[in-house]
Image (cartoon, rainbow over all chains, first blue to last red; front, side, top):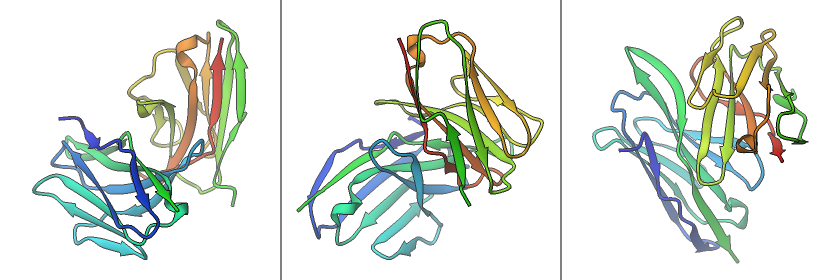
Length: 113
Length: 111
């Protein structure tokens, strides 16, 4: 299994739709999880951290399933401005210490009018 | 707060030329990173510096060197550029091994 795996998409959805992205990770000892957003020709920007209990930020909900090593991001009421690539990010954890972040290749979202 | 800044924004080099990419952060972060991003490959870590005075290789260090000049600045040097180093280079910083904050990137073309 790849360290962090995402469906590359693209996901083409109409405005107002609900869309879900999934991500799996290989290191069961990973401790930190994030979703980043990257607009075309721009740098990645932190969208939200992902906590064990799940967390919500406005229209965005992130969930973590440690048993299945699976992370999800749900976007409700999609806006045109949500069009971007969404990167799943997990930290390496080995030898009892936290390692660097591993970035998935991203899932591209295109929201159409 | 400017966050993470990078210079230059764009650069074209001929094969064999050298150059240094500059990165600075004003968030007082201990850790800094250099990534390259190629189509279909995602972000790949070149080098990182966990704290001032230390540097370590990442996933793709060959052909690059780095210098952690002080807590704020982390530079990436290409000694003899090759076409395979055509890429977008991002610098990032973080407090510990937590979420990272990225600079705007440098688009490098090697002909």
